[in-house]
Figure 1 (cartoon, rainbow, N blue to C red):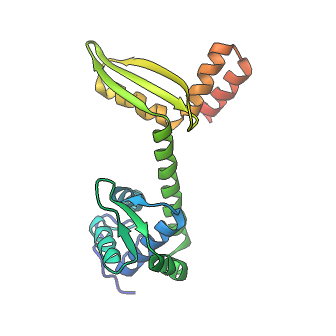
Figure 2: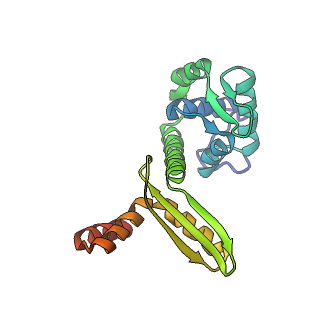
Length: 196
């Protein structure tokens, strides 16, 4: 098989033809069933060194020109699959190795889950006279279940608190609930989840 792409940054088993990259993009958008930001698509494919950055950008442009995808105007720049792109994904997805398909969809689903967690469980970082206040909101999607504020001496630590909170806001809630209710069982369960 003859390769027709730049391969800088492409790992073993990555995509080395323009057609494979275009098919994978259609497959990704079709499988996720939701529009994705362009930078998220890049992140997903580059997470596993599946394709070269410039080749991905070129493929997105080409797919848009051919009407297989559309890109929303404005700040969001969300990429949507069009019916013709859906058709390509359905007909040609078997040309891609199953490991690449699985990795790509798993990375996309993780990204969407993280985005949902971050949207539902907000964190606000505010500078104060002694450092930063980090206010975390635990939500079930409809209402705040708990809000707390922590002190961080510098911006680096404030961002670290935000990042770690977003990983598992549910565990933070369970640990706090166990502490204030005195429930040893709930505390033990929460600690098992932290260590597993």
